Figure 1 (tube, helix red, strand yellow):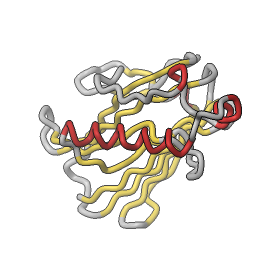
Figure 2 (tube, helix red, strand yellow):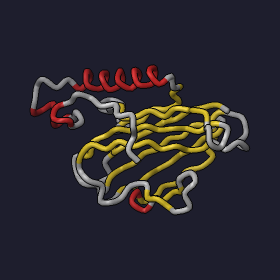
Figure 3 (cartoon, helix red, strand yellow):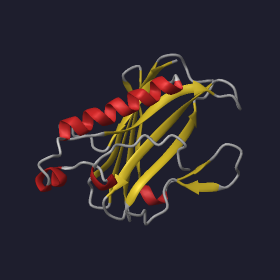
Figure 4 (cartoon, one colour):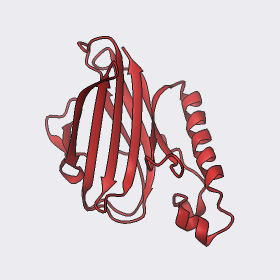
Length: 185
């Protein structure tokens, strides 16, 4: 589902800044581009009065990553309780025909769950819809993508600290998305 909240950068030709851009154009400052993305997301959070519990980047490499999303915790007005909402805006520079989604969940700093799936095979059920939907439809096209995903936080989960780490790679095992979310119930 496309996000109604497009937080975009003013990067060259609408593409994400990358090492290749920096080599082609000396006017591209990767640190400044990353800082601008972070500032855009902070403005978005402030304007919507959201509480951030996680960040999404285009890579897990701390030196060259760029923020492409945020995870917030909000009231679940339909089902009661709370839910997380993740907003992501990113650009793919090649068609995605495969890859992996890795997830690692910790509860009170102890391993709780970890798994991985072929990214093109992931299905889920949206609220109120009985049919499965694909996480992404492969091949995933080149270009800018924006989406929002809600996940209900189950009311019966025990109180404590939860940490969720997610990595999505493409068919050539390059990072596409890297997320870390931490919250307390």
